[in-house]
Image (cartoon, rainbow, N blue to C red; front, top):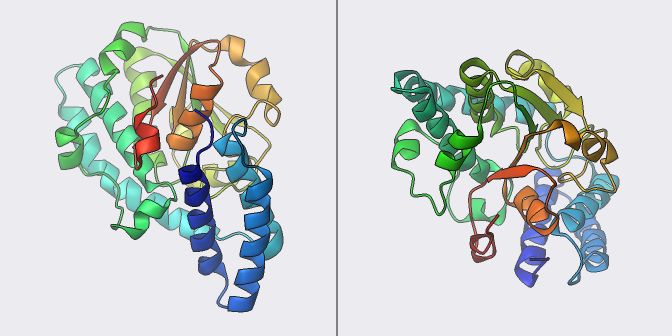
Length: 279
């Protein structure tokens, strides 16, 4: 599945919201959006990845007007989600078995991807998932039992982060993998800003250093693990027994470009395009 007209309109809607966040000057905003529109036009077609179009359009916007997600904004998002994640932690701690705890963490981490920037936020306010939502979640596809079969002591998991708002729920998942299953977790973060995704500079105010065995700076501002941009990820891929990616955009990329190891995608489906994905 490659980029669709719906995907293009989604990218443009997100960029428009971001430009509006930065600039109150309508003439400036229109000029920057025109540049973004031209960039998206260059990266549109049946063989173009959604992640590439999103990356290039965000880079163009940053060049023209700056970055819409300040450090203060991202820290606030993290704190709000961390508070909500306390309820999920209570669920995890009351689980009867490590397997039940892992299932809860997987669902919470998947639900949290709805916090990623997207036009769906215009339809209804988006908050971090609550413990009630996690318990009552209706899953389009649930591979948690398959994950339980494959998780084993000493295995290595590569975890590719998404939005900073998701991270407190991801940290719960990483904590369970390490503490209950003795899994080695290697977490990949971006070197500079793409949307509100986790960067190396964000690590200091999070729990990542406590719950991950290693944190790797991908050294780029890409939407996901685009092969031409993050060669080091693929050079190290032979170390991994399982790769976990977060969110729709990253899911679509690994759907189109399957990895050589088992891959688990945790994502919320805000549109009909996403419903077609079957990893």
